[in-house]
Length: 430
Image (cartoon, rainbow, N blue to C red; front, side, top):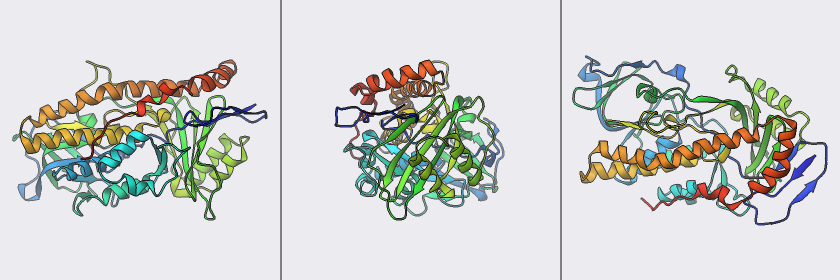
């Protein structure tokens, strides 16, 4: 039986029912995914917390603020600091901006941050509004390029792979790179993803695999796609999928499936596309057609992970003048669509506090970083837990439990207004 409902954000109150032998279908807004961090094999990190002889002074650069990683959180932090008059350097292990991947969903809290840093309107014109709400699926590539364009030309240091972190005798941090050079930084911001070497150095455990993986891709329609601007969600047993128009020519899709282990890393796009198609081979043809029209460079498969920041147990987000942001600190699953939005929130909150400490001197940098952590934790921890629990509910595979989910929980519960209260976030222009 297929049950097709309006999204929780839909202005229409009616339910539409379609009886079929296809899987259960619902249309809520969904998250496009938690952005994966850099490949840990790109780093060789030795956990050393004491000063050493290090690199000769002639090969060592002095920087005030260094941001490790060049994803959404790092670029948004750099842009926010730049608008507040604070220069930073972003270390990217790649040889150019990593613009691969699919898309991500930005709710109103994410758009408020983008408005605050001055890029919201430029992005709005490029992506479709979903069901008349301040919700859009945004191509990751375009978001990254837009943020990078706001920075001075020398802000991003490409090919900068971190090899070692040390405390320096002066109270700063020495970052040694694989090319033999090093940077002495007064302040280090770790935005280096779910496998963050900076987080590992600070004592954080590896993120926990939650029991399911996701295929994601971006279907391309050269002649234009004809889907309505809404999210289509399909539920099966231990398997779910969805798709949403991103622009007049592109449609984002995903498939989440239960798996006892994360499985091997697969990079061959032909294999990924074949596996994704086989997983939903008897599902609606629209989904299969979108997968078939997906360019190789946009299809990915990732295990979903998170980290629950238990009070008094988890390490703090900052240590001296080193601080973590986004997935390096609080990776969460895609089930609330808040991964990218929380990354943007982190960036603007941290930038405000750090810039104030640097420019006014009314508080120390260490206190500013602790203040950032104290403000963000009460928001981040509940969202991480809630996203995990929602994912567990949606991935049920027991037939009787799935029936209750499809006929009671999703139609009755997820339509409630409070389900979207987590997208409220106040953010004044920088």
